[in-house]
Image 1 (cartoon, rainbow, N blue to C red):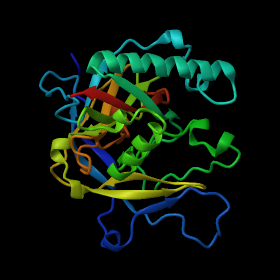
Image 2 (image 1 turned 45 degrees about the vertical axis):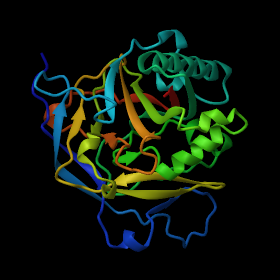
Image 3 (image 1 turned 135 degrees about the vertical axis):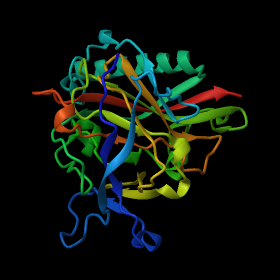
Length: 312
């Protein structure tokens, strides 16, 4: 039986500023910009009393993808892919690329079998290795200079301590149009298919000892709690979302999460194509001194961002 863990979490939220009524929050990730240009107008606040529930405890209701916007799903880690650490995934190396492809294919099969999906496509992925453990007071803007293809996916990035969504509704519609370009028009037909943007997040380490992922029950979130954030890259603009603090939010985590405990979370749902609240807020949680093991191993994880189709 799980022992009592933390009941609250300290989490980084977007400040609820009047500025964002007239100016969109933004981050400039593009390289070689005028040094006098402010790279972000994002201001964050750390809230220390976020209500937290451990799904290991029998008294905790078990989240589901359909109701809460996320769930923990038992899935034996596909060791046959050859991924043992974050160093086993990357660009520019045939073996690492093959390991990633095998992992993606395995995840496709898992999603199809568990959720009865007709089709699954991957539009993005991340590999993370925790390098610092603290709630953020400012966004982490990475330099992609020198990375292969100026790709964020070409580097191991830190765990994200800022509450976010992996895509705004408007951005996800663009992703759908992009990944299905040149394919049969039926894959854009929401009268025939329920189409969802999903993130499948999984530890690479045997047990998560630091920076566990926490997720917020979407039933406690309103559209207005989210602000869309523009991320300006060299050749494109992506849209994420950051969450503002509301007392009603309820957060969940899994103590001692293993590599066999994948998280499946919702980003976007064609049943609610313009609504923000159906995207699961999430971030890494800083464990307090009394809750973290001495010499805890840094967290390593892999996440795939998918589109999944279910026939109606």
